[in-house]
Amino acid sequence: MTTGATPAATTAGAQGMLGDTGEHSAEWLLENLRTVRQSGTLALTDSGGTTLLLLARGQVEASFRLDQYAQLDTPNQRFHLHTHEPTLTPRLPARFPASRAPLMRALPRLSPPQRLTPGAVDLADLLERLHEARFHGSLSYATERERSVALLVAGSVRAAVHEAAGTVHDRAEAMRALQKAGQAHARGALELDALAPAVVLPLAALALARTAEADDRTFDGLEVWEGGYRFYRQGQPFLEVLGATEGPTRRYSLGEQAVERAPEIELPDEPPGWEDRRFTLTLRGRDALNPMTDRFMQFRAEHGELGRRVLTELGKGDTLGRTAKALELELGELKPLLERLERAGTLREVTGG
Image: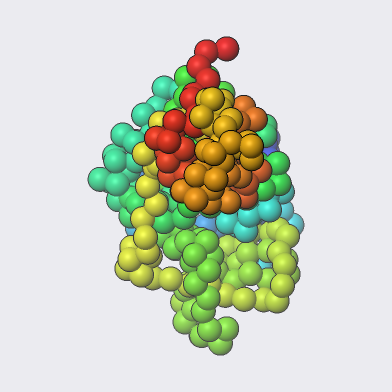
């Protein structure tokens, strides 16, 4: 887009153009888009909500107001401009299009995120403040190797996904991965994205696998189809996020009250980095794995085959995170087993180095 002036604080990239209009109004931005005959989707957000404008060669073909968006003639509006050929429905790109997790592939960005400083954020305090504000949106942390997303509805985390090396975890394990953003050496991108309820509730329904009837003419929710993810309100599609999907067309829906009845996902009790701890066998632990000792039979009787497997893996000196993966256990499942083995005097933590 070439204009005589530029909106304040704009950034361009895979997510399109993100920025705010500064002292200018959204109408001023639209006028510039008319001048260059731009086609695409313009998401505008003010203090009341979001509106989606579908553009065809600079003209507004359709508009969809979400929440209590005010009007185009006010300044300081945040925006996301995604250029594409003229279509029937607004489109925005997925935040993580290559992800194996459907929630990440369906997650759009409506406006510029609030970028937080990794390593300087108390995640528990942040989540408490978001809870008090009844925040709707997502909190994400991404590095070159992994990404985590927590979906908040009315200030509470109702879905969470983590992906690394092609493996997807959800719920508590995803929140544990998100905790890494609070570690002093964290270097990824920690971002807070506000989302309209009309977008965040269907995403929660998708994550919680709450399916809906296919023939509901007043459908509010998310439709998964061969081309991607389509958001509906009162039976009318208002947003598409293109991406890979699997299986037949299906729909997901969940009202806000129903979402709020879903179990809230909390941060793990363990501090960030807990999964990086390592252990070594004590003399008692080595005897417990030696069939030539009396302690071997006693250990088997008290801890069973699973206890033996856990002790064997931990004795290799790998991290708790890798040990859990080798055992095909969640870290939350490994924790009580580890505590039992520590109480039995079979392990000691490796410190330093």
